[in-house]
Amino acid sequence: MVDRNDLGSWLAGAPGGDIQKWPGERLGRPQSGPGSMARVGRRAVALIIDWSLSYLIAVAFFGGNQWAILTVFALEQILLVGTLGYSIGHRILGIQVQRLDGRAAGPIAVGIRTVLLCLLIPAVIFDADQRGLHDRSVGTVLVRI
Image 1 (cartoon, rainbow, N blue to C red):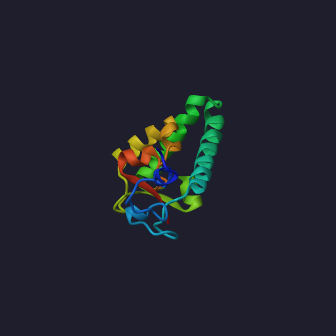
Image 2 (cartoon, rainbow, N blue to C red; image 1 turned 90 degrees about the vertical axis):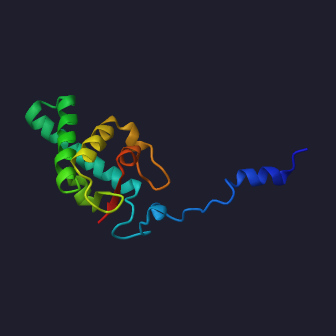
Image 3 (cartoon, rainbow, N blue to C red; image 1 turned 90 degrees about the horizontal axis):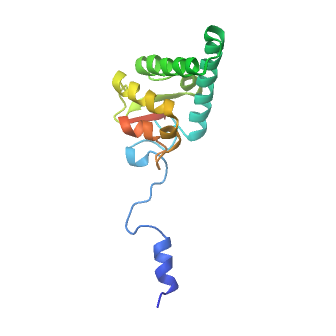
């Protein structure tokens, strides 16, 4: 016969695992301040800023073509994140793309990250550290600066 205690232990989660207190703790990131993980709100607002700027540029120079918007967005990500570590939206919100060890992401990682970001789905699926699949796939994090 199944006892209520049997169900309670199952519902409590996996036994023996350390519970992460904040996003990025297991990656050695602080809970808040510089170097801490950029939360979903900051990332979303930065994305909206970048997408809006891309839209305005595409409307001004390419008649608002949907492929032009995506191309302008991708170029902004590749050029700015690849050289500076942040896009315009990232800079306004005080966040930066870094490798797990804190160094710059590099052009290849940023290129792959951008392609995945443009697909959108990898960016909206994230883990307990609030890293999207696009960041996990290339070993980067989006942190506060």
